[in-house]
Each structure stands twice: as C-alpha cells, then as structure tokens.
Length: 343
Image (cartoon, rainbow, N blue to C red; front, side, top):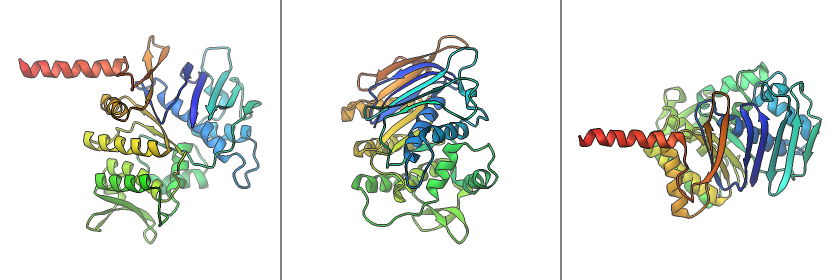
C-alpha cells in the first residue's frame, strides 16, 4: 500500500507532506489548487513501479518514469513541471509498504532523470486513474491518437484506461467482494456496458437485454460502467490502487452515495483509493463511512492563502469533518437556504 507522499516544487504544489495514508484517501481543493496534479504525481510513480521489470521490460525505472511524467503531464520537457519562479529542484518522495521511491530534477531537465532511488519491490498489481471526463465514447479515438498518431491530447491516464478496458471480461469465480460490487454497480445503472466485437463499439445493455450505442448513454452510467468492466476483466485485483478525479462528476446524489459504499467495500478487500473532490456531499458521505466502519480516511485539504500560495492541511474523517473553505461555504449555503424556508 502507498503509505506516504512528500512533494516539493512540483507544479502548483510548493510543499506537501501526507503521511499515514489509509485504504481510502481524500484530496479536497478548488479548481487549480493542485489536487489533480497530486493524483497524477502518485499515479506516475505507481505505474512506473508496475512497469519496471514486468515481463520483458528492459528500461530502467528512471527511463520509465521520465516517459510517464512526459505523457501524463503532456510536457515536451519534464523540467517544465518544476514550480516556476524558484531556483530549486523538484523533489518527490513516495513510500510503498515502508520502502522508498524518490527522485528529483531541475527546470532544465528534458527527459532524463539522473537522481532516482528505488527500494520498492516491483508491483504485480495494476493501478488505474479514472478521470473526471468519461472515456468509453472516446475509446477508439484515444487509442488512435496515442498508439498510431503518437501526439499529445489525451494523456497517459486516458491511454492506460483505454488499454485496460480493451481486455476481455473473464468468466469464472472472482473475489466475493468484487462479484458483489459488480452486482451493485450494475444495479445502480440498470444494466451493464459491453463491447460489441461485430460493431467494434461499446454498447449499453439494459435489464431487458436491449442494446444502445454508448454515445446516447448518460455520462454517469458510463463512469460507473468503467469500474464494473475493470473488475470484470480482472485488470483490478487485490492491492490495486485506484485514483478517481471528481467521483461526483455526472452522478446524482443517490448514485454517488452508492458508489462510495462500493468503494468502501472494495477498500476493505485490499484495493487502495485516492479520490480528489470539491463536493461537500462526497466529503460528508465518506465521513459517515469512516464513522460507521470505524476506519481511518485521511484527508488533505488545499486552502488558498494568497493568489500564488496554497497551504495543505492534513486531517482524518474518523476524527470529524475537516475545517476547509469548501465545506464551510456548503454549510453556510445550507443554513441560508433553511433560513429562507423558515421566514
């Protein structure tokens, strides 16, 4: 499991230290605060460890990481990831199962990382990043753009997800929690999403076995169907890490609540989650899950203290709701609405 992350001079993140990570971890912040940057930094490191020494992979960890950073952050020169306006190097230190993976480079770095230490054992499980925008209707476009045209546009989080979805569903016994989660996911969307080999496209199949092209299907259905598919084709296993950017995107409150219950179930079975959100509803639901299950849900909150400076505060939902401007504003609006009703 990923235990700790320390970042310095990484894009919009000047300094961050988040330790004692748990089964479910939440990043709260407004637009541009760096929450997606944080998730992508963790994802790039995790995927590097998963590709390193897997099969016939001959590249060094430094080579894999440099390529991953370039395509994940869509940067011609990875030195552009160093925080602007300072004369210091980018530093990243991540701990997996108490073993350290760390690297650093300066703003003039093009694509070679010369300072990297890796004490982490190669990972057999797969991590995945679920972006806020849906992927299924763009599946073939993403693959063509990256695999044939080899151009920027869709970053590595999209490419890796498109490739993972391409794997066929595997029949047979799965982990009981995974099977139960799939049934719950399919109940939320009222069917399942399948790939039609004849039409070479994704289709939504409802409970009556009627099929509809994925393009006319609601975004919320497609988002939940992606998680169902990755559990069904066994791309995700115990010890996988799932990064979800804005889980609330395109979902109504009941679906969000049920999805987070499923995430909690999968977390108890061994999958680790990192969620980035600015939704009070997501925070409140995770707070209730932490209280009900009595397990830690670490939170790191980005608070803007000036036009160019963001401060990161660490809390735990097991101890209560964090003090954060997004949460405070949500509560203020709720009280204002109640006040208007009671007038």
